[in-house]
Amino acid sequence: MVTDIEMRKEIIKTGILLLEKGLIQGTGGNISCRTKKGILITPSGMDYSALVPEDLVLLDPEGKVVEGARKPSIEKEMHMKIYQLRKDINAVIHTHSVYATALAAARQPLCPITDNQVALFGGTVPVADYAPIGTEELAQSAARSLAGGSAVLLSNHGALCVGEDLGEALIRCEMLEVFSKIYILAKAAGGGAVLSDEQVRCEADDLRKRYGQNR
Ligand SMILES: [Zn+2]
Image (cartoon, rainbow, N blue to C red; front, side, top):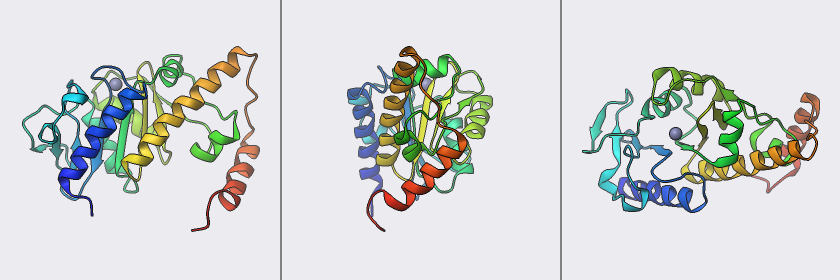
C-alpha cells in the first residue's frame, strides 16, 4: 500500500525524470495521481528539482484545493476532467517533448507507421482541438480526443499520457516521443507507410495473444 508521502515523492521523482529524459523543459509540464484522499498535482511554475512533498497540492473530486499552500498546476482542469471520465486510470502526465509537440504544432495526428506503436497505443494518437492553456475548453477538448485511449496531442502545445500508475504514464510519454520522432523522420525520408485500419486491428489482436507473458 503506497502511502501519501511515498506518492508525493514519486511524483517529484517523475518530474525530475521527465526533465532528465528531455520530455519537459524548465518548469513546464505537470503531473498528477489519483489517491485515496483525492487528486495530488504538481504546483504551478515550480522547479521540479526544488520540490518538497508539501509543495504538491491535494484536490477534491471537484478540483477544489483541500491540502497545500501552493497554487496548483494551471492545467488542473484538464487533469480533473480526465479523472472524472476515466475511472480506469490513476496517473496523468502532461509534457512538452519536442517531437510530439512538433506534431501537435502541425496539428498532425501520430498515425500508426510501426507495429510497435500499434502494440503500445493501439493505433493513431489523436490531436485535440486547439484551446488556450488552462481553460475549461482545453480540458474538454483533451478529454474528448483522449476518449478511451492512453495518449493525446494538444494542438500548438504539447502532449498528454495517462496510465494505471505513474510508471505506466511515464513509459507512455517516453514512447510517444520515440514514435513521434520516427514518424517525423519517416515523413522526411519520403513518406512512412501508414498501416490500414484492418492491419492495425489484426496486429493489435495478434499481439494481445502472442506478446509478453501470460497473466
Ligand atoms: Zn503545457
